[in-house]
Amino acid sequence: MGSNYILRMAKYQLLLPKMGESVAEATVIKWIKKPGDKVNADDAVMEIATDKVDSDVPSPVAGKLVEQLYQENDVVQVGAVIAIIETEEAETAPVVAQPEEVAPQPPEEPKIVDSTYHETVSSKEVEKTPEPELSEIQPENLSGIPGIDQLEQKSSPAAPVFKSEGRFYSPLVRNIATQEGISIGELDSIPGTGSDGRLTKDDLLNYLQAKTSSVPNTHSSAHVESFITQTAEQPVKAVDSAKEARPTPQPVVAATPDPAKTETPKVAPAEQQPAPAVSVTGSDEIIEMDRMRRLIADHMVMSKQTSPHVTSFVEADVTNLVLWREKVKNSFEKREGEKITFTPIFIEAVAKAIKDFPMINVSVNGTQIIKKAAINISMATALPSGNLIVPVIKKADELNLVGLTKAVNDLANRARNGKLLPDDVKEGTFTITNVGSFGNVMGTPIINQPQVAILAVGAIKKKPAVIETKEGDMIAIRHMMFLSLSYDHRVVDGALGGSFVRRVADYLEKWDSNREV
Figure: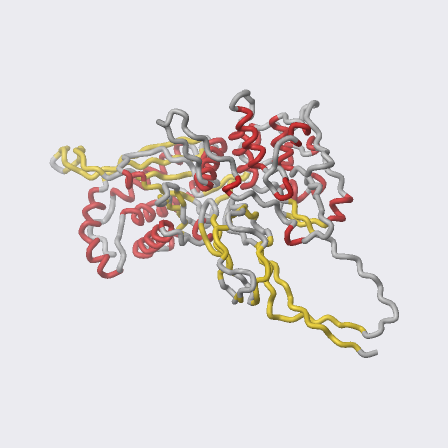
């Protein structure tokens, strides 16, 4: 029997890539390529924004963009299919002429993505796996999540059981409803803005906020939002090892399901959200937090709930350092094309002190202390919007002062211009924040989780100080500054924290005035 071939263009599913630690989702800012546009390998297809960085999503293949699966302002989960690209490579499929008998091929099972764990399952698995009761998800399955101990995980005897036949509720929405004591009837009455009228997390939180404004509740919506953020940012280990503990969503499947479009429920665009409150008296202005500010707020609350903060202070005499920089800054700029600020000098001193006290360069995972091999210094940077971002200088201990200066200036400039890449804000092991740039003499910074320490450097001020000379003590005008170290008292005791910040001050005070750079 003869056979011939038909040619089919291969279709590539472009996924939203992972964009650093703790980043679970991104907002679509702009589509650079439109349906029908030609796409080359490494061409940027779309612009996205996260709580940490704005960046482009490139295509790893060449072809033609045939479908966009999300609109601008949609929030997309990491790993979701965002576009379909028809590649230029052809697939060949044999077609047999005059077949005697063709066995019917079973239709491809539609894939459904569990938005809680970002894992693809087949519809057949969904049908076979009964939806677990909320009480089956035990607290030990959520171990390791900061702040989880503050929430009751076991359902009370009166806890509602969610088995609504007419409406799908995600495991996250069901968990919030249980914490807040919302019955299935009340949940059905809340209007949803998600796909097919689905009730989203934001819909439920807005409802709770309106409800708690008149009726006190033991768990505020802000408390639940903090729990959600912590849960999204931390790995749930038990789910990987105990598949039966995973809550399986009951999907609403259309007549002809499209696997690419059933991945994750889309969040409604910003214009569909409730309008901000208006001042009644006209004297106060109510400003809604932008997305980045809300995520920063949640991260700060989580850090305070996770780590018992202690702050130690040291005053340092940096007169020799100030005079040295004043002497070399002009020649340095002419030679290197870069301005030398105090920040790279502080980073160099911190990197040296970390080598002396390596247990300050750790993170905590449950009862385990993870000692970091690399010294990656995070550098808190203020943005024009008033928000903060923390780019990272990788292996700072391996760079000389010139290399540190160029790295600091490059990251700071790209941060202010929105040009940072996802790799620029991940894998930090220790953070420095310069409160002196705002004229502050000291601060008590909040730890940048999952790190265990953060150093605030204050403004350098001229002040009278007692100095020791061969002729005796005398008072002189010196350049003085405060260093403030906040640290996680679970793993960093006062002796270690105090000794570390004192060592940083020693490196700054003993600066060589004749140093060549």
